[in-house]
Length: 182
Image (cartoon, rainbow, N blue to C red; front, top):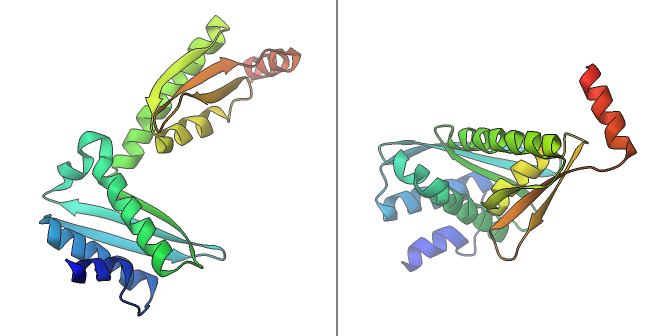
């Protein structure tokens, strides 16, 4: 096991980011007994490096099960490994499997649109169920595009509800009139 951990967190010698990520993924897949392949895309930008991993194979359903928690775990491990081995490099890590992330984001946005419409029609607050941070971010970013609505996370802990409420002022009435004219 020490050999596997040294692969993940390094054994003192550093190499390029792509080979460290590949070694980590290969180690996890072998030790976990997963029947998966992956496509790794590392794009180096001016300030950040994007690491995108897309899994495919027989065990895809395991990754998608329980709302993608195993995908989140892979993403967290890879993020921590890159931070540990390359502390001066800012990395954005995205792990997906068969378009699972885009499908779940589309479902979140569809529900947010429905709740936004309810809040505007009723003129009062509505609430989105408790969500983890990544999903809350998707909802807040989507709702921020409409200036007639505001959203706020409520609660303690990792999972929080989202309060969606209409903006109550003269400006919101002007925005609503302009939106209706378009």
